[in-house]
Amino acid sequence: MTNLSNRRIAILTENGFEEVELTSPKKALEDAGAKVDVISPQKHKVKAMKDHQWSIEVPVDKHISEVNAEDYDGLMLPGGVINPDQLRMDPDAIDFIRAFFEAGKPVAAICHGLQTLITARVLAGREVTSYPAIQIDIENAGALWIDRAVVVDQGLVTSRTPEDLPAFNKKMCEEFATMKVVD
View 1 (tube, rainbow, N blue to C red):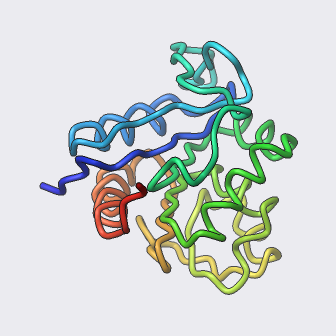
View 2 (cartoon, helix red, strand yellow; view 1 turned 120 degrees about the vertical axis):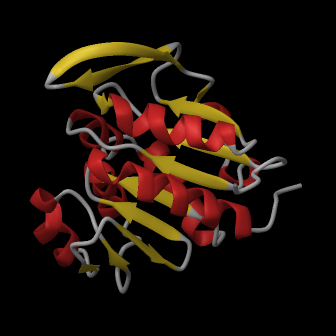
């Protein structure tokens, strides 16, 4: 099993994330020993979607205004349709995402979560996968879209759908384990 003790991981989300695309990676990270913070433009909690219905609420550990990428070893972006659409309209969220890429830190994104990476303009020249509906958007952002359960490119781990979570979680933890720990 991958050991992520001494790793701090940020999960950036808004209301409307796909429930299992946050809860499953968060559990995998914590089970591997990582300290995980749920970060959001929302102050206290964020609400999930499951089967096109509102579902659970997840506590927000830190508001986006309280964090810097320097405080974390990696970033995880869950999908859902509403979540990334709201995040990409928040300049602080986009700056936070971009800072991980500028620092060469690992990032994991699943399903529609890659839409925030399009807005952050960090996909050019990368190989990725995502939910098939956003393939053209990703290609227009300069990335090569590959139809595979998980794609890893220079510390960027991407997956298509909740069905890919076992492969996604494994690769995400492996990538987060190989990177230098922040002081």
